[in-house]
Length: 56
Image (tube, rainbow, N blue to C red; front, top):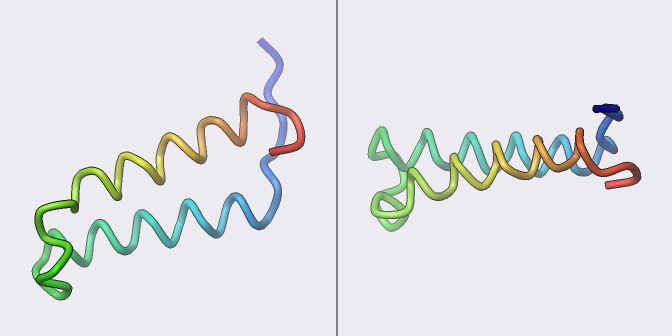
């Protein structure tokens, strides 16, 4: 399996999703509290896809 470096934009979007998920879980963003796990999971999946798919 060949892994590639994700683009900088992909990396920062994944980080932003993860931070939003953590903040929602901690209660800093009450409107997103129900989606905290999904935001965190989406950030991880995006980062994993960025490593697996060349040019993403």
